[in-house]
Image (cartoon, rainbow, N blue to C red):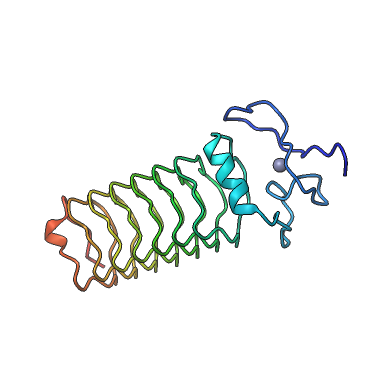
Length: 207
Ligand SMILES: [Zn+2]
């Protein structure tokens, strides 16, 4: 496919206004990252290192579809992954410090042990996600939909959880020191070993 250019045009980032030149090509004329086709994506074998390199160079991830991608231990520190589809992706033990995951789809994603300090997860979708033993120190989790998420032993110190939906989430042993839980929903959440008195503001424990 010599000369293939993906149909996607970047609307933000350093390549704003340029066409995407990534591959391989999918049948709808988009690359494997931008294709709208609902089928398995033949990601490049070096996917994790390719994405880490884009993060290091400050290149865009706009419009990327990375559902079910195998990205264990990937380093995406500081990357702009806002709005990216990472549903079901394996991001266990990854480095996501100060990464933007605003509005990102992380439903069912596997983030065990990931370093997510000071990341922007505003309005991210985290339903059923595995966030056990993650470090979310100082992360912005306002408005996240984390229904049924696994946050056991997660570090949520100083995190902003205002209006987060943590219904039926498992928070056993999580550290919420100084966390802002104003308006957060904790209906039927599992809270054994969680010292809610140390949070900066109260959550909504009512039905
Ligand atoms: Zn593309």
